[in-house]
Image (tube, rainbow, N blue to C red; front, side, top):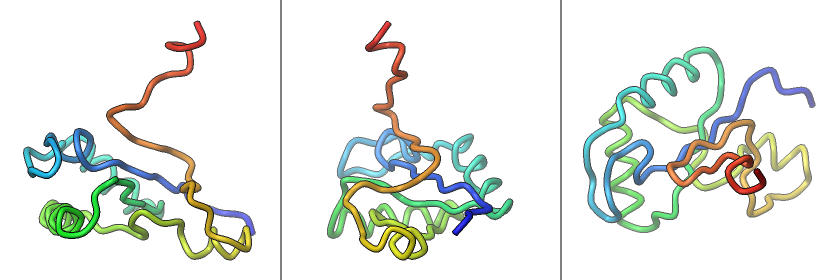
Length: 109
């Protein structure tokens, strides 16, 4: 099943929202604008966060207030589950956006 779109997984705390769990903070407008543009171009978005329960609900509501909606939350897209015949714990995507991201060169030289 060829995918004609990118899948982008994005973290919440320190990435979409300049906050420290469980607080909510200032929006990362530049990133949100990028994601909205990508979604408008037909790409899929996954909210990929350690938040759960009320903290997750609050983050989802905060994202909706910013105009963001997601194709999946802490889960693979249904078409990926169908493609692989299971739902692995690792999110399948083309791009991971996270404030704790590190370029491989930083650890391998």
